[in-house]
Length: 268
Ligand code: GLN
Image (cartoon, rainbow, N blue to C red; front, side):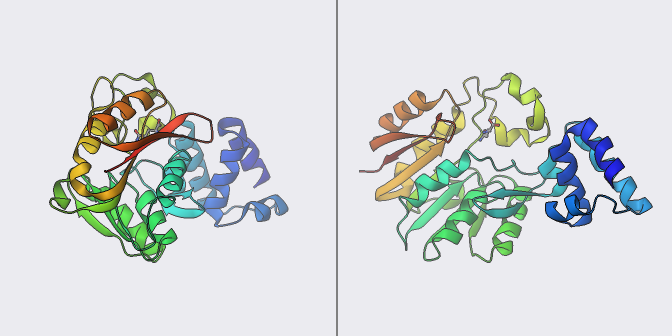
């Protein structure tokens, strides 16, 4: 094991080398450190080589292990869904502060279901609905609701289409907001993530946020909140869109890096 780990660490770094070894062996980090002389079977050795080679090509670790932690829980992830990001926990925190114990919540563009399932876990009395335009993503989200033992209503469709005529106490969304042509789309993990989860192809990256914000008043109960995640430079634009849509109590929330990352407002 030690030689394999050292070789892998040289190619992909010690942290990823260890995470992939733990995944392969179903072992904890502590076990791995305590058992450096553990001998891999020939097939494990080949599988480890393949994991390391794919990581070296840029494949995200979360797609190789099939999981990512979000809000203290493990979520199944795969190439059909965006890998949950720490900054999205800022959106969840703001949402939990505003979702009544027995309220209703709508998560638009749910992806892995990380937001919807977390809300359902943290507010067992609330009714959570999750919409996504990708059937494959909904499958992943359904598996995550099952994994954490919560009931979420999953609906296939674009933004508000599947919830026509319905109103919620809270609407949240982490829509695609990366501007078309942003160089990040061609770098790092983003190259492997579903393009439609990252960008809607608009020049300023705001088309989906426009649709989510403009459609929200018709789907919020009076006094209900809309919260959206957005890009590092999109806070003023989002606050402007919220004002245009008639929202009150418009505010931005900074993520742990201090970047305004969530914008929200209250329906009057
Ligand atoms: N936060 C992601 C990124 O910049 C983008 C997620 C999104 O578009 N919703 O990598």
